[in-house]
Image (tube, rainbow, N blue to C red):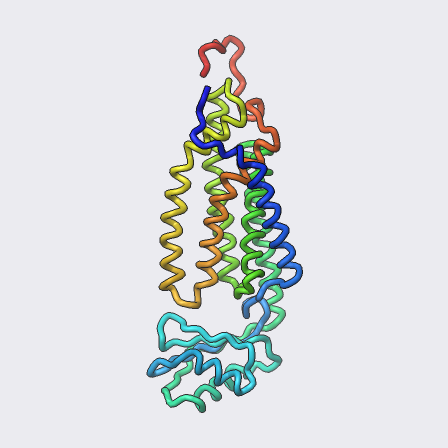
Length: 305
């Protein structure tokens, strides 16, 4: 019985080897380079000012560097006139006032203060701990849900795919040394949800086909299920990427990290739902006995598909 249009499982070994290499590379980067943690996690000062007229951001950066505020991040916030300055941890809570004074002395523009926020190191450490705990709780919740709704082998495959996606996304931010703040952490949680949604759709079709195609091998059932859901997977990913690309291009520097994490997460999540999660089901030797509904004693077996 021929069902497969494209034999995804023939690429299982290659894709698993590629995934292992990428995960190892990401872990090495995270261990050696670490993450470029933002002000939310390290503590520091945030100053938002409004320029009339708009100012060149490079001039603002040079002004701050010249006056001893090295390592500051300067981005537009919403409009060209609104400037957000993020400064690393400092022991003095009046750092924002000093920055504002320097900016006013160096510019002929009318500068009005919008807000000054100070995040202490203890608060930043708590945010790091709570963010990591949030990721662990999300993954544990996924494992419990998939075990209850499907089967333990499906749960292991789904969680492995999620961990794969999270590690690779973190590895991207580590390798490129992009800013990692609360918006990126929120994007990681969204990536978990998106990847899980794709995996659940595929898993549900695999479960259904195991019950319908009783005389077909597990490899062919998984391949057939992937081919059936492929169109939906591609269309969903493509439309999501269109929206995220618009955010990345037109959303401004303030959400570049958020958009970058989601764009990469959607791409890698689509890949993992097809090759990682489904491939692991075959590796775990999932069979129709794991999922099939027991037949009544007097059922006509020959009438089943």
